[in-house]
Length: 183
Image (cartoon, rainbow, N blue to C red; front, side):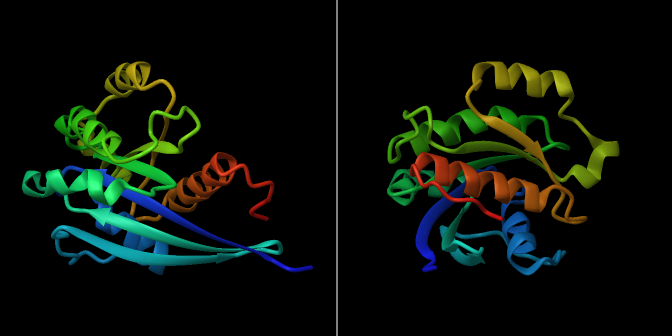
């Protein structure tokens, strides 16, 4: 049986320091690098996934969190198959800023389509004891953003990293109306 070859572009956005680069690095290398530097502009990394029925090439665009790069976001968003908007559970302000990232992303994407895969990620779950973003804050935010999933994870421990990216890929397959399984 011939395998289906697929290519997806996934973008990840959020404030500087929320852990976007660490999240991607953990997913691609299965390691945590304490010394990762902040992204300038955008970095593009590749992940290759192979199942019994598919070969998936996933371009992961890591977008810099500094305001000076935000005007470039709509350009980078073009052609996206999915988006992750990330906050830091130890920084309450980082979830409120997701609105501005969503607005900018919306200028260059298909996010208006209700099936477009968007996941809000609460990173740094290993900092649970320093949690500034309580469950009520998250519930309130998700009430406004009701069509988006929310997953918390830790790049440091690896908790929920595979679940997050498996969810993203499954949603991209649904969005692309591709009848295939990741198993």
